[in-house]
Image (cartoon, rainbow, N blue to C red; front, side, top):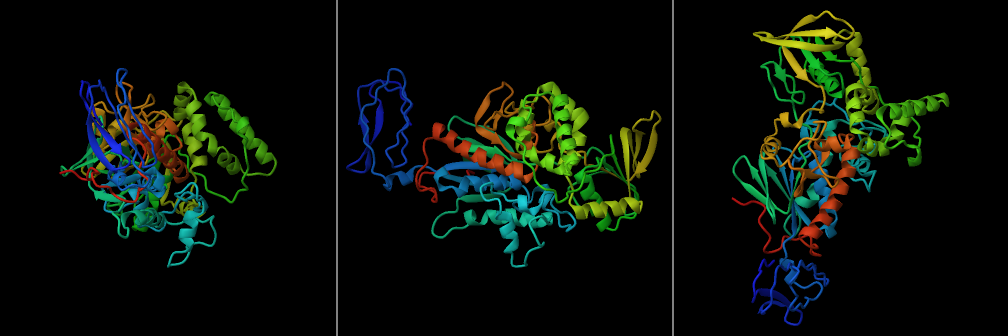
Length: 537
């Protein structure tokens, strides 16, 4: 690239016959010329108003000269499910021309908070048939599961397998790209904590806590679900194994699927003390059943309607299906292909009302538990090992034994108190992202490179998943994927939704790099000479 704006500018010319680069000086006013080629006579030029092209000759298709063109380099911050699936989407198609660096603070790739568990009772909340990481190969996970050396874990694709096993599957997806015969690996895995991202005119730089820097063409935030920040000595991480006196009282805030996982962990750990789960409504997730699928035509969906009309439409659909002997689960599953568009077109005021009044009801029907988990939970409730309260915490007073928690039951005016030894926040991921403990997210907010959305439940992103800064300008090189983008997509916490988003983002990043960098070289399996190193000291 030449940034000249003067007479006698030097221009690089590719000579077809000689197969080499030559310098050519002409008395012409060259403002800016950018030349890229993929050895197929493709040219991208940005020329100022007064500029004129002096001379251009093209190299032959497949020539060795273009192998020196740098490959596209994507840096993915977060090596959990979102990061692994995005890396695979970028790398599985050679025509995309990407190599990737995956930065993960944990020791294992593909685990994240959900899939690092060693508790076999922590199973997927989606049946195996729908857990492929590849949207164009829906049976990929089931085939992997069936072909394991240990043998299949369940008799048919309806089963719900341990989450640890799914973490094995995600880690296995990266193997073809981290090792190769005779050519450099296209995927570099770096273990460390990302603390900052800098966007330049021609590149993006990611800084780690150890001071190392990684330079690429684009960077993607794939940090997934964040654990809540502990504010009291008795606060516990909901994703970590329990570490508490087995006879103490444990208070769990929230009654969703994360609460259920933590209860199962406590019981497996031999906990004997009371376990109290508390939420405003005290609702528990529904369980999966084998329900016949149904189809809802897109033309029948009331896109753009307010929350009240949309909920009435949904109830009418459920009632009509039940009257015909169907299952409400079939209706909920049938609108799944449309939920992101429904959310996108929902007026802002309706989104606020949904979050305040309807979200809990939607979550228990949409995000269901496996039948075997339902059985285990029912046993804990009937045995008095778990109590579920519809109540709101009104105050917390730390003390030597943990904390005295004051709460008010739903529908009552008087308050009650409960002495607990541990408090576990399982209220879900809808939190102000500015309060997240992830240092890179905090740093982006501090520097104004990111901002929250209007609902303050996620970072603000453009339609192409580009991160929007405090001035409302979308980045050209910094993007986000997965639960961090929930403000824009809402339904973006389950694998079926994230895998589709990753596939779409991979294609978008290719198009963006076409516009900003130029077409990729045909040879995407090598790391060409002249490419900027993955790590810069």
